[in-house]
Image 1 (cartoon, protein in one colour):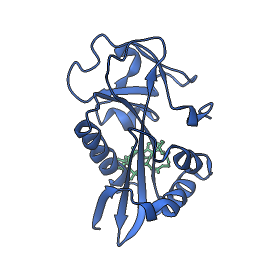
Image 2 (cartoon, protein in one colour):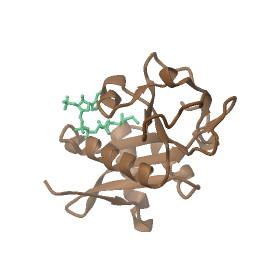
Image 3 (cartoon, helix red, strand yellow):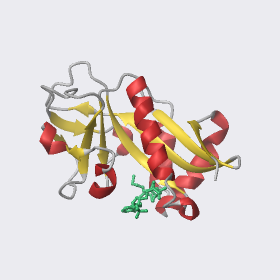
Image 4 (cartoon, helix red, strand yellow):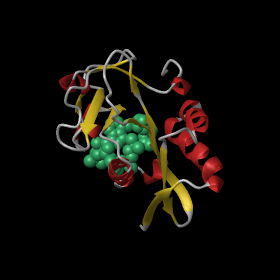
Length: 171
Ligand SMILES: CC(C)(COP(=O)(O)OP(=O)(O)OC[C@H]1O[C@@H](n2cnc3c(N)ncnc32)[C@H](O)[C@@H]1OP(=O)(O)O)[C@@H](O)C(=O)NCCC(=O)NCCS
């Protein structure tokens, strides 16, 4: 299966909405992407198979409410979605790896994620508490994670991580 991962283009919007809607089985994440699209420091990549969009990943900047971000750019990963018939074939992994590489190239120092601990651990995400970062949402133990894109990137950084207001209450 030939997979191409590339940046979102203007004509991809409908397909991205569809992929998120189907993968999550609800419109919440698809609508969220529509609200976040085009905001500063966001990154949107699609996975394409035979010219059809079958996967998508989005990153948006977070802030530290009671801490010191010191000019660093910390991005939040999510949502990430792959159509059910293409899951468990490594596409999500490729989207995440290439997404993280793009974040690094854009000058981001770290990426946070809220999701399945085992899945994200394989990319090197550690519990955010280990780096003195807390999540604004009430989340299961170990679900909020962070990855430093360069060693020591978060030194001296601590606080409450807030996602973009477009996330609403995060539900
Ligand atoms: C999560 C998701 C993007 C992964 O995409 P994928 O292409 O299946 O991922 P990969 O094939 O690269 O990796 C699959 C691995 O991820 C893990 N995994 C995938 N989906 C998972 C899930 N919902 N819960 C827990 N683990 C999951 C499995 O351990 C699997 O490993 P295995 O095949 O060795 O068992 C995809 O399952 C999806 O779109 N899910 C619905 C939306 C979602 O929950 N997104 C993540 C939250 S933002």
